[in-house]
Length: 153
Image 1 (cartoon, one colour):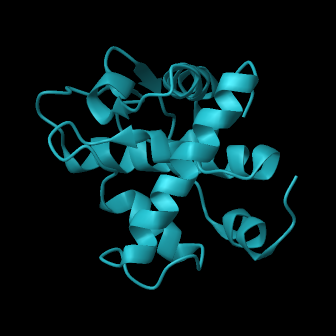
Image 2: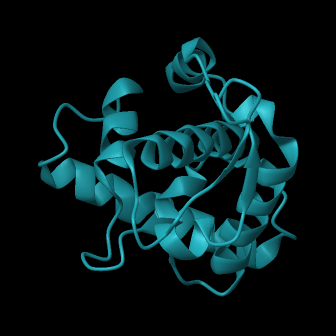
């Protein structure tokens, strides 16, 4: 388990949605782990499709994402869950599991992933070569981990 500045920064983040729905969190984690075991990536839409979120801090606590019409709230929810899951995988195995989640068209993570890297102090800019190198590194680490483990991270 890594103990470094990244772990400390993760622990300072206020998670708004992920702690409130362990069932949705477990299903998202399972889907990411399955992609990792197959050494592939998963799109945001495939990740979220069909999951009913039960989030007590929303006006309507039951929320399902329409993967054909993403709203700002949907992006915030998925981003929060992905950040939280990345915190767990980083603490357990030293990689960001959300690196395996990408946009359908561009085939790379969204701005939220790079914002997380910046918030963690790993990059200065999402447009840098270092950002792309770090993404590729975490994809490789995730693939290696999930192919050797039962996806516990």
